[in-house]
Length: 199
Image (cartoon, rainbow, N blue to C red; front, side, top):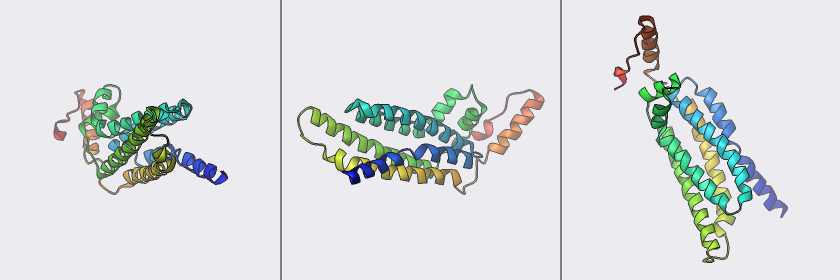
């Protein structure tokens, strides 16, 4: 009993690792506008997800629906970052720069794979709960033995990939300096910046 409680406490504790790692990675990768934008989106989503998941623990079977839907949001943020930046570009120069200087990295591909795996695992758990509610099965073997360990492994992999994303050695936003110089020249001549070099 005590051993099971300790293991569950470890799983629960590791689930809180992502947000601090994202904040650290945000500072480390600040010079890259694409990395900065992605980590701002992910950290915001992670904060909301952490609060909602803690509340959802009291919702019994609806908890699995909550974690499944939140996993879809992570996939959306990674895949649709440029679309989100396009909608927000009128409110911040960062989002305008990201929209005109967007690229997709292999680290984001790795993150996408992790979030797809997370979605698959939560879907299986949700399906198992649904089958239990419909009296098709009479126990939770996947949730009892695999759900928490698999999510813990994915959480640790996510932290590693996010740190990898923030510290990668690839050139940081090739066009950023060009955009900044263009913006300074535009302010001096009072004309809008030209982003034609990115098309």
